[in-house]
Length: 108
Image (tube, rainbow, N blue to C red):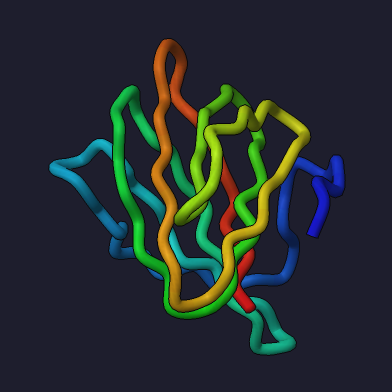
């Protein structure tokens, strides 16, 4: 799912409890839509992290930038307005340096 340009989501519910990973280097909130889809909206602080996936994901960069590497792949760059796809039942590495990486994770 490419970046839509709209800086907000309307008519959603948000889980108040944050998802905190890697000692606070990644923090997100779950957003639920009326059609049943779920996304997470979060920030990754400067760090090198590895994530496992169960469902396919699309990582949309809202601000900042990151380097990412899909399982078995090469390092690539993702900047604001860009996104990358991660297969289900896989993993990816992400490196953030400088300013925080703001993202929306689209599941499914």
